[in-house]
Structure formats: structure tokens, C-alpha cells
Length: 227
Image 1: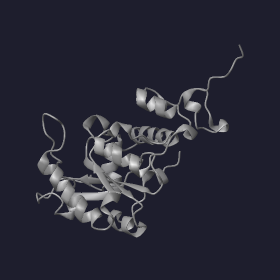
Image 2: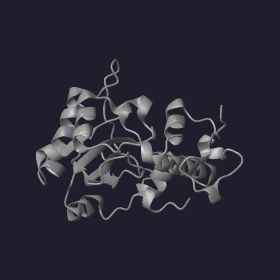
Image 3: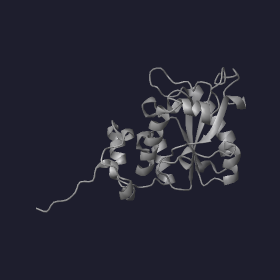
């Protein structure tokens, strides 16, 4: 039988001149899911269409959302560098740099009903979005107040779900076709950041001016991070 070279997983999607003999520290100890992701060539990854996104959200099969392999690698590198730097964790970075809620009392909610005080929430791009059709915009709504979940099921209470639905309708569905708006909240096991409440909003082919307005001109971290 002929022989062939097995490419180490940390070489996948990496130009030959940038490959290292040893596995980078930020790729050690990956979960089985992340290891499969990083080991997959970008060329073999299937970008999700809007119809597929809708099916995943409707069926609550959120574990099917994955990043493009090379982006997952960059995210792991960013997370490692952030945790090793002055912030100490991605959650602290988000609070300090993205939300600007890190000062004394800055992350404390006003006490007003959910989504009625603009200081209690912020809409930003997902810094490291999933592998989606390029027309899909992935936003995250961060809140200072709790998004109350049922103690037994871990799912949102009916009241919390209704409050989010009302906010999403007023903010997004009022500005674009209803069928082009989806939202979901990750289960605890799927959250990449546990310390700050948030849920996800996905929009199909929105007006860029509207996105600049609702995010206050935000730029996702994946467009700024230099690996």
C-alpha cells in the first residue's frame, strides 16, 4: 500500500509558511465538537442558508450552529489571548470593551420594566458569528436585567419570552419583513459567555443603514482581530 501524510489538525486551513511543529497552546484541550470543527477544511464546510437557519431555530436545534473552521480557529486564538491578557476572560473583555458596563454599578439594571430603559440593553454584532449566508446579519442583544428562565426546564419563562418577542417586533420586525427576522437564546450549555445575559437576533438581507442605526455603528471583533 502507498503511504500518505496525515496533516495535524492544527495545520488545517493554515498556509504552509505559518504552520508550526507543535500544536499552538490555544488549540489544546478542545472539546470534541471544536476539534471536529478546527480539523475541517473550509472548503468542506457548508454555509447555512436562511431557510436552514429558520429550521434550526424553530426546532431549537441550536447545537447545529457552528463557525466556519478558520473562524473558529481565530476565535479560539482570540479567546486565549484575551484570557491571558489584562482582561483575564472574554466575559470581562465584553463588559469592559464592548458594552462599557465595567465601572462601579455600570452593569446594574435601572429597575424599569425590560426593554423600556435604553441604558439597560445594547445591540451589537456577534463578534464571532456562525457560518451563514453572507446576507444574514447576526446580532446579539445584551441586557443588564435577567432573562428569566424556568428552574425546571432551563427555558425562558412565558413572560420573559413575551417580553423579548415584543422587543424584537418593535425593533426589528417593524423595520423589515417579519419572515426575515429570527431570534433565539442559547441554552446554558451552548453559551460562550455566561456572565452577561444576552440573546441572538438574525436578520436576512437588512438595510445596512438600519444595522448601523441599531448597533450605533458597531464593528464586530472578527473584523478587527489580527491573528
